[in-house]
Length: 114
Length: 116
Image (cartoon, rainbow over all chains, first blue to last red; front, top):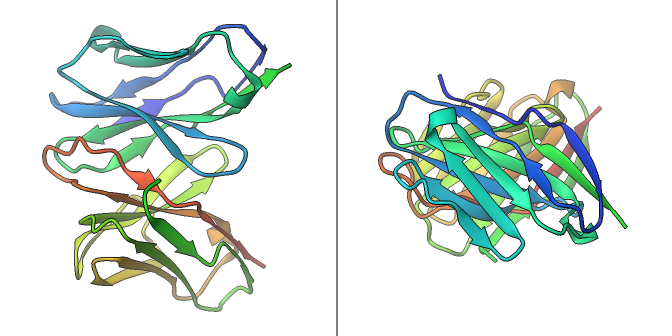
């Protein structure tokens, strides 16, 4: 069975702090894809990043960075110098190469205080 | 932004009534999905479609049916709504799905459905 676990339900930080959102996944597939989505208070879901199981390179996009480690089945997301606008619910998701269906974690609510 | 429109955006109805939610896309994507979002559960797949008149069940399909008569429209129907179906419903689309899928799904703005 496939599963995505985001153990941190809520995180609160003060602006300019760095914060890491954890994501641990379970799958028996050798080929799979991992995603992060952001859901701001307005409610829409915004795609942030896609990573396939063969590419373990870390990725940086501005203040965002992602650390993919197959050895620990983790795909963690770090926001550097957090801003109030980063306040949102963040979802990690796993897609099976067999079905293409997305399995979402429960989400982590990030609150960045000024 | 992906061209996805969900309607209605908000709906309040009574237990036992039928409800239909509509998802319309202008991207000509083959795959369309319906999810529900509930606290503590993230998003869960209800049904999805891999082409006109081709649909399949997701993990929480009981009590829901879908139809896709045109590429651009994917309808979700609650035949007899129950209070447990109170939720936020999201439609998503992707260029590909199934085997070898690596394309992200893009989501509509959601429909907030309350069943009293």
